[in-house]
Amino acid sequence: MILNPMTFLKKGHVASAALSFTMLSALSLTAQASPSVEEDAQTEVSAQALIPLEMEVFAPEGTPLPRFMVDAAWPDMPATMIIGQVPGLAVDSEDKIWMLHRPQSLSFSDVGLAQDPPTALCCEPGPTIMTFSADGEYLGGWGGPEHAPEIEGVNQWPRNVHGLFVDKDMSVWVGGNGDGDHVVLNFTEDGEFIRQIGTHGLTDGNTNGSLLGNPADIANMNGYVVIADGYINKRIVSYDEASLEFDAAYGAYAQDPSGGTREGSFDQSQASSTADGGADPEATSFGDIVHCVVSTDDGRVYICDRRNNRAQMFQRQADGSLEFVEDIVIAEETGGTRTVSDIDFSPDGEFMYVADMMNSNIWVLDGDTHEILARIGRVGRYPGEFTWLHSVVADSEGNLYTSEVGTGRRIQKLVFMGVE
Image (tube, rainbow, N blue to C red):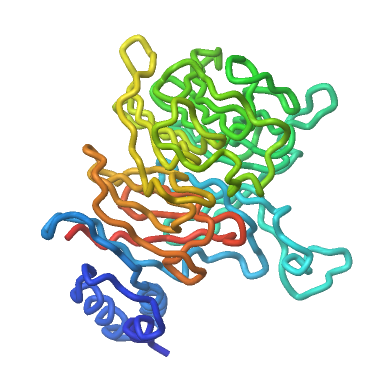
């Protein structure tokens, strides 16, 4: 059965007025023009899966903007496999998509097939780290304590994984924000342990260069490994890429880290707590979740100060230090889980994409001026909608991939349709 994409519009998947009729017409023609059902079955399925997103435009009329549709058939997950919360995404140099998920976030009713004996016909959790091709083919996975070393009898694998980065050498970096997860681990692409920063169970505040405090995210570029350190500490910390020797630690505005540390272990209820008094986009220290760090080829470093509804942009200097450039404030009145959760850029750098957890949308900014141009998506559980939106990454073709935690527990592909 071939479905007209307009059917989805009638069922509440509202396209923005800015989404051109030309896109929908081309989509419909793609689905109807197949000379042979057998020859073009896959093409038809792919075309039928493209669904419009909601889009609100703030830029002046005529401003070129990227357009996306959701591929509701992506990825092609193995038949009996299921994923839990997804707190990490990465795209490598070959445009493979890497996904980090939390098998322990699945309940007994999700994984009946994995019980001994099985209690249901489906399902079983996928590996903690999974890879997919750009067209959604499952390529394999690995992860878990068996991949990590022990130090004084304590396995170093995070109890609650958080943050994923795949560098230019195809090595994989993983952090964690569970009880005692004060480590960043580095592996080969096949899951062989290489090295680590920090030690599970040991933390010592914002000024200690060798110990971490629930690191949330990692970036390895331009000769430095930079960590958003993150759920207990309130800083970013920089290490030499080759030796992993401590380089420097920075708080808000690239000053010495301040603002204290979280008392006790982090739990998810604190992600929406108002005990901090609410977001303060002018705070002199980072909020209590320093959520992401994103580096660019030209030495820019962006930090997600999620609880203060802002990103901060730093610039790497000739001597290796970081200098503050500007605040980028996103929906400053937002409460709950707050806004700036992750950041990435279009391949040409023209557009900056900001994942907003509480408002459940992606903000589209000018890549140079950081002016807000539009937002796409809305809260919900259908294609192109988000629940606990966590991560956003772009591939070399301009497609976006998103992940959700909390009760969202999924990844989505937003297919780049061009700029208009």
